[in-house]
Length: 263
Image 1 (cartoon, rainbow, N blue to C red):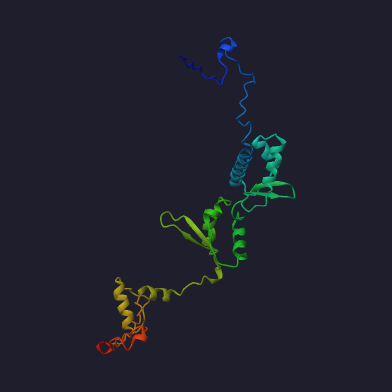
Image 2 (cartoon, rainbow, N blue to C red; image 1 turned 180 degrees about the horizontal axis):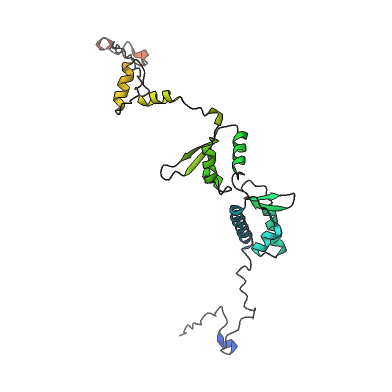
């Protein structure tokens, strides 16, 4: 009688017995982890420096909006010495993109903050209104971005009837400003003003509406009369339902005719 003997399958990895029980050491690679990129923040670093520059120029514009700064002034503020970074920043500073908030003067290669509107005083505001084709107003909040004393200057212009200003009811802060022509500001006759204020307006809107109707005037609040849809009172006769297409005409002599029984 023969017996079956089983043998274990060889291990896919070498056993420690073949190396005398000692584990093999990994090759020394100097501790460098190759799965980690060494430099990944170059682009974000450049735009971070650009943001710092815009904030710096905006803060300086609040002190003196007419002053321009050299490229060296900006690099000294950022403490940037790398030539590649300086060249990239210079290209960003001189970008012609409308969203670029840095103004560049090619005459002497200087820079300053560029607000949404290039308006920094009362004379530039009047020139802007005269050049535009429409009578649109400007947001005072947007004007303050490049004109720090805009609220104080608008009070002076409003007193001389150079502009029209819309203010908030809460704290009377200027919200929107429009152009105004002082020559159209005419003084009213005092007698006319007195007679105008003598007119008593009814406190109840319905009384005012009834007074206008009694005077033969059409008030703006009068409801619009809509013409109703014309309806025909005559009843339509019910159409007689005709039969469909007749079939089996070849059996007409055999089938019985019940057409006389139709209603």
